[in-house]
Amino acid sequence: MIPRYTRPEMASIWEPLTRFKIWFEIEAHAADAQAEIGVIPKSAAAAIWAGGKEAEFDVARIDEIEREVKHDVIAFLTHLAEFVGPESRFVHQGMTSSDVLDTCFNVQLVRAADLLIADLDKVLAALKKRAFEHKLTPTIGRSHGIHAEPVTFGLKMAYAYAEFSRARARMVTAREEVATCAISGSVGTFAHIDPRVEEHVATSMGLKLEPISTQVIPRDRAAMYFATLAVVASSVERLAIEFRHLQRTEVLEAEEYFSEGQKGSSSMPHKRNPVLTENLTGLARMVRAYVTPALENVVLWHERDISHSSAERMLAPDATVTLDFMLNRLAGVIDKLLVYPENMQGNLDRLGGLIHSQRLLTALTQKGCSREESYRLVQRNAMPVWRGEGDFQTLLKNDVDVKKYMSDAEIAEQFDLGYHFKHVDTIFQRVFGES
Image (cartoon, rainbow, N blue to C red):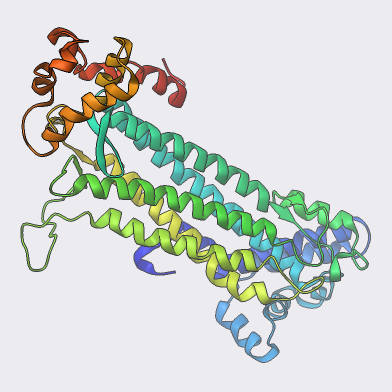
């Protein structure tokens, strides 16, 4: 985790102290269940809870023990015993390290998912606001980066809203995917621990039972989770790229907010660069990069190995922290985005009416001209306009072959900008569910 791209609430989920507190909860809830079914004394379960609640878990002390024993869970249990006392012999009975590690990992992933879902809600709120603000603000739609036909800036925002609505739904599913608990003991057979202990811990920690584990929780769950994060990051980048293109000097239809005192270049005082969205593009690459090790973690030897462990210690904090930062940055970019309708209109007019070529093509076919001939006539008049040699409507009105099918008034009618927006309300109703 790099502090520059880290927000405190998400970072705290992955701090060692948080991890140890979750480990303690798992052990203590397990002790409660063990006591309830008569495996350990109820007084022991009470002592474990009392010792843990009074404990000021010392990360440095646990690290010190681990340097000697070379085992993180044993180091923690040894430190916990320093607070619990003699009753600590009843801690971890019948359990194995993965019961604690994997259940804790899923708790952390669930908490991270909750923050990411809240982040997505911020993005969605900002997109909805800007979509309705610019519902009928005309702008040019582009295919292959080339002027195509008119759209509205509100439709661009509505498209993004629909995309991030899907992203939110995927995150909810990803959260459910990893919200499982396994307290099944060595190689997952429950030989040394009653399945009722797992049921109690799962309920207490807000998780579901892992139907079958092999000592470790299956890593296809985590792989799906991090793949979802990568898809969300790609959606962030798609919108960031859109804003970056719209901010180019020769386009300048929208622009990142440029605050008082901000400087865009160390050498050129006039610069206003899309640094926030460029940053999002770079960070998206990192979130996507973590999918590969997450997928490779699915493949473990037999019932378990720990080849996944080192990778997860890096990828889980980094991927969740980075996406959390990205979504919050994107929400701010959308909310403060400077939009220039005048420039949008200027770009719409830039090609001298060529953006209405499809309407002319269709109108000619409806007047009895073959599609092939219609295309030839429209393109014949469009190409000079590309070269800066006249106005499209004027050329069409002066084309004797076109005039065989259409009058001047009928030609002019095809240049109505509003024609393209007649179904905007329908699209908005589909996206936002509002009339």
